[in-house]
Structures are given as structure tokens and as C-alpha cells.
Length: 520
Image (tube, helix red, strand yellow):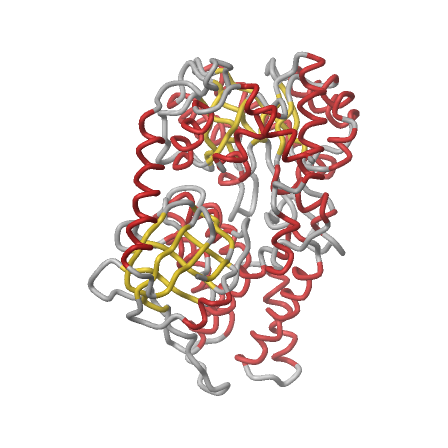
């Protein structure tokens, strides 16, 4: 049995089928100019984005923006003017961008795989060929690869692909997030994947993070029996989230657009709004935003919908708002900080949210990302209230905000902990580096301590404190988070049944005891 990082729960057994290797090219075999290849790759990604639901659509849209980046085109042209053939110029231009991303801190380093996929698509168009396609052996299979691009993962069909095993990748990579959204068990950062051949039997446990090649029948039977028990327990519990002794915990969903919404949840804990702003030369109008927000508010009538204002910058650059060149974008002008550069964007968004809220009866809350100080929280809350939005909070993703949680909470109406960013900023660990995966684990006591401080500050002031990071979707960790004082959990819809069942199996006293053990 081999170990990796489990990023999407579930157990599956099947025959392995490997993703083919990248095609090889000769430098002189160019079918189209490089700028045409860039445009073709962008159009291809845009078509894919239009054909899938969020969060895949957002990821693919961001990749399309990479291909259309004029700075990238200028760098490639510069290498070609220096005498390099188009193939080498493309590789050199992307290599410069890759170095910038890899050196820009954990948030952007995780996007290197996305950029590599764009490069490979450009090269394929340049040479008039295609990238390796997902295998189609004619039967359900376990997909094994060195790594998968977001575009490849977004087009997988659950039921046909039983599970995913990759050599590379991290717990918060786009591939991991998309696999979880699709409900496909997945294990990444598994070195043993390199030795798995086509046709071998593979048992994958996406919760434990284990991969067993040619497992004996008894091992398979035991694993499938455990999975059946887990699924049965998850579906046996229905209704609002609560512990075994009735302590209420709101169970909400994360959404990244206005299509394919799961409306069975108690509400939305994270409504990402970037889908409206990406791949544009100018900001969407207030009326465009009002209509898109309204479709989500209508779907969750009578329930809470927490809207995160534009989280631009870092891996989500906007041509009309963010700085094209920052020495360290992960620590630069992103999230609420972008409002200093383009305050009209935030005001327009708040106007649109308020107008859409007035059209529907959802309980609309707004929150700002990347807040560090109580002064920032107070300013955002005041602006939101001035636009007629009565409930305004902020995300706690920066350790400074957690350390001063009481002052930050006093300045607004609620807090929402983004555990992905909080973990990477707290542990100073590159999200792309598989060797550092243990540091990025949200079970790290230092990260849990910051969640505890934030939740206790909210409790003292009577302010709700939720968690909307990937940690909320882990049934075992969800119990601990409730024990730390968290009042709501927001996750991918596929994770709701297991989290609901885990809470129903523990009293609040159990949760607090387990939280104390985790902290120690």
C-alpha cells in the first residue's frame, strides 16, 4: 500500500489507465504564428469554460486570461526578435512567467500547473497537434497520471472515471478542488503512481490518501464495506446541521457562479463573484451584476447567501484593475486591497448586490476578502451599510486578522475563516511543494489555534464565525471546528451529507473534547 494526499473522499477499485505523455516537437515544425497559437489556446479554454459549471468554469476562464496576457505575448515576441524559433520563444516566454509564479509565494505557486497547461496548449496549436486525451478504454477505470491539468479534470465524467491517482499536485490545487466538486475519489502527491501500469488493479481511498496496487480480495471487500457504511451513515441524516444533542451548526455551500446550483443546502456560505469579472477588458455593468446575483438569490429564497466581493489580484488578475507586475503578488494588492486602486469597482459591486437583494427575499450578507486590520473591516462595513446592505463581514485569511480577531469582529457584523489562505500564510509553506503538504494540513495546531481565537472573539461579541475553506468539507475536522466555536461550515455540495452525519454522531461536549485534543 502506498501513501499520498487524499483530496477527494471515497473508495473505488478498478483497472488503471494512464494518461499519455506529452507529444514531442521539432522547433522548426510550426504550423501557425505564435500569436495565433495563443489566441487558439485562449478560445479553446473559453469554450471549455462555457461548457462546464463552477468552479471549473472559473478556473478555465482564468487560464484563458493567461493565454491572452499581452505581457506574455510581448515576452515571446522579444525572444523571437532575438533570433529564437517560435517554439523556443514560446517556451522561454512561459518559463519567465513560470519563475515569477513559483517565486511569488504559496498562493501563486499553486497556479504553476495551470500555466504549464496553457503553455502545452499553445505549443500543440503551434505545431498543429493535440494534447494527450483522457483514455477511453471502453470500461470504467482508475485514471493514473503524473499530473492533471484543470481542463483535463473539468472534463472527466464521474462513473466513467472511478478515481484519480497522480504523482504530483497538492491538497488545494485546482485539480484537487475540481475532483472533489465532481465527487471522484482522488489521491495526489503519490510517488508510487509512477510505477502503476495500464491494466493493473488499483484500490484508491480518497479519504485515507492510500493507493493499493493488485490488492487481495479480502482487502477490497473490507474497504468497500467501510465505504458502504460511510455512505449509509451520511445519507441516514437529513435536515439542518446539528450535533447529537441539538446544538445548531449551519451547513452551507460554496458556489462560484449562477449555474447548476445545489439548492438543498441551508444557504450559501461563499458566493464567489469573480466569474463575472474574468476574461473581460472592462468591468461588468451594475445591471449585468444585478441580474447574475439575482439568479443565485432567487435560487436560495428565504435563506442566507454570503457574497464575497471581488477577490482580484494574485492568481486572478484583471486587465482593468490589478497591477500587471508585482514583485510578490501573493503579498500584494489583492482582495479588498484592490479597492484602493479601483474603488469604483467595489462601490459598483455593492450597488449591484444591494439592488439584487431588494429584488429577492434571500438574506444577503456581504464579506470582503484579504482583510488584515480592524480599520479595513470598519471601512468595508461602513461602505456596505451605506449601500443598504445591513450585514457586512470580512474574511479571516491573514494571521494578523486572527490575532486581532476581537477588534476586527467589533468593526463588522460577522467573520468567515478562509482556512486555505490562513494555513499557507501561517505556515509559510509553498502550496505547490508536495514535500510541504504536512505543513499545509489544516489540522496543524497553529492554524487551529488561530481559528479558536477567531471563534472565541466572535462568541464574546455575539458575532457569527464561519469556515468556508476546504477544511469545512472534512467530516472529522468539521467536528473539531465546531468544538472550537465555529457556528457555520461552508463546503462543496458533495461534502454536505458526510459532514452532516459526522456532527449528528457527536455531542457538543464531544466536539469540544476533540478540539482540545487537536490543539494539544
